[in-house]
Image (cartoon, rainbow, N blue to C red; front, side):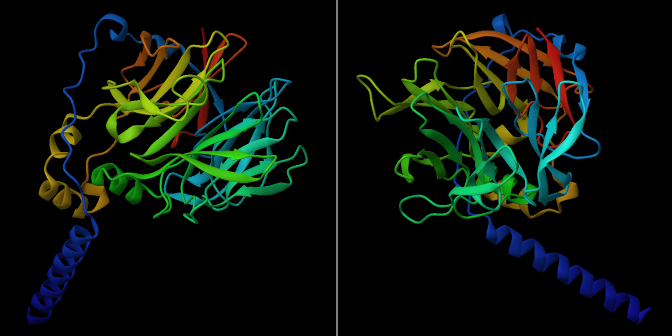
Length: 362
């Protein structure tokens, strides 16, 4: 009995010590989110996404973004499992649905896009911004900004007509993990940002210095601005590349109904936005309370609130007006939409934790 009591005491002490250390490691700021919008009008609930088909990835996880080559083949970065983001590769899915390894990166690749020369420009979680040639050879383009701050979570990328590469980095202070993602979400501190890379000079330039979980990136049809998702604050920022407002930043759309992740442009200049899930009342309520955030963050991961499986994507006009919203409220067919890419009448839907790519017929 005495030995049992000593063991129980030791375990209790270990738990309390771990709890305190975890609480001290989180240094959150208070932020009061705007009241979430009602799902009505062009945001009215439906279940259109339940007709989505799946493209299986043979056990691989996390097609966060999707690139499409001239022949219509799909490419996506994947990782080993829902808990292992350290190992990964880039897969190729041909027009017959055959899945092969295009490049063994040994790292999760998130955002990716083809340039004019069919080089795949991608966000590599170990290397930074990379270029992959048609044979799968990797060249590192940029691993840090002009101030020496590393791109520890390079997130998404797009390319302008003049070949300038625009990309986001979520953090220069921590690498990606589920725990660190929650930390970034709860701390609400500006980190990372939006950047450009000029292939002709090989120089990086910081455009937006500090974002709130900077995520999806899309260059406008007219190449006059670039969008970047500010995930934590439920909004999308716009950085002006040319024109009267060149070099300035404003809010493209604010107070979105979900946690925005990826953004991509359509041929007509409008945009698709993919959401990780809908807004959480619990998260919105704890954001203003730094003490409560510390307590929740300190609890074991299995006790913390889980991301709800809820499929949602949105069509925005070129001016940021909501045109239509698509849902799978059950989360059974589309559990998340980390990215949306349109090609030949289909929407290809990515996911950070899915084992497939969604294929939705427009």
